[in-house]
Image (cartoon, rainbow over all chains, first blue to last red; front, top):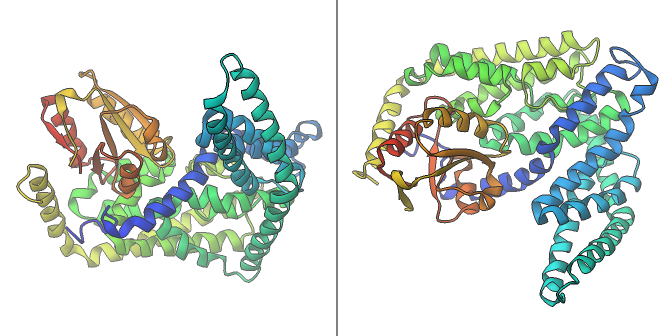
Amino acid sequence: MANFIPAGDGGHTGWRAAVQKLGGNLAGMVIPNIGAFIAWGLLTALFIPTGWIPNEQLSSMVGPMIVNLLPILIGYTGGRLVHGQRGAVIAAVATVGVIVGTSIPMFLGAMIIGPLAAWVLKKIDSVLDPITPVGFEMLIGNFSLGIAGLLMAILGYLGIGPVVNSLSDVLGSGVQALIDTGLLPLASILVEPAKILFLNNAINHGVLAPIGVVQAEELGKSIMFMLETNPGPGLGILVAFWLAGPKILRGSAPGAIIIHFLGGIHEIYFPYVLLRPLVVLGAIAGGATGVAVFLATGVGLVATPSPGSIFAYLAVTPPGNHFGVLLGILLSAVVSFVVSFLILKASKAGDDDLAAAQAKSKAMKTGTAE
Amino acid sequence: MASISGADVKHLVVACEAGMGSSVMVAKQLAKQLKDTNIQVTHTPVNQLADATFDVVLCHRGLSSRAKQAAPGAVVVIFDMFLGDFRIAQLVSDLKEGNEIVGD
């Protein structure tokens, strides 16, 4: 059983749960707002000067959406997670402070100030609520939020905005150095295994996308959106499992391919890799190949393709980038397939373990073993 | 280990990271399989489990330690595959037949 699913929920996963939790909180502020990101992404792809149908008036919405609307939504959602509707409102107020304090899209700043402001209000409420006289709830509630919101906005403007701005500069130039030196494909060595451990949303929405939007605002596109979201490596892995995986897994692979590649639910291929952990090498090789092709052809996306479906990819690919994007996805799928296929062929003997593990697991359920 | 009789389960919640992708998919599949019963199937982000109403939590093994943190004492059933998982099949038959459901 120990080798059955190495990513089990045993004692050794405490750090993973902690990292997932942090990342989950970051992603939890972004993911509910993906619809707004898509509206912005499509607006950008269509109407900016290098878009499909350039239009000066309509493209004037692009800037306010990315600089104001999206960070406020992120802060708002972060606040709501911490302290409900009141938390959401104060977070939105405070987020304005970090936005106007800087010139870049303040995703990271919003992720910090939003929950922080809501947490402060939660503390204030826990002090004021018990001592509020009957009939004064609304008066005190509104003014405590208003005054605390004002103070948090000032803190964001003077304190958090400038700090996050310089942090973003450092991150941005680090990433640019990786791009310039051609080392960016090495990122797959970290990204692909982390995905399998369900850190996919944390990495993409928490780390890569905030860097990507800064680039996209300057250059009209970014490769950072493609590091985690490329559906090619997962496709290669699932095809390999379909043709050469343990027999018990082959039946579900075609359905999983559709859900993964067309539906964009990458989670569906993680369990296959967890059952045959070496296959992660296929994911890494495929991922690195994809990034190398994207880099060599100079392509990028205008926004995060979320979910990571081929359709979402096509929707946020700017004009003239389709060849490089599709080639990268195709080659990453081919490389990941070949590597995974060879690994699965070489570990054929494993079928018996799996059957044994299933029998054991069944025995545990009926209470005959534990 | 927490447990509950399948006959007492009125509400099953599927948890995933975002509560919008894989959990929705699994919840839809389960709702279809359980449509002859009165059991309601919903989905939630794993970090908001504490605010959800449920009798049984279903989540993938990779998120199970967080599910248990978020909902201490809950009956947490863990699956490995998003399609064709035998633990989910077992859960469905336990629910239909009213067998005891023991958390993983």
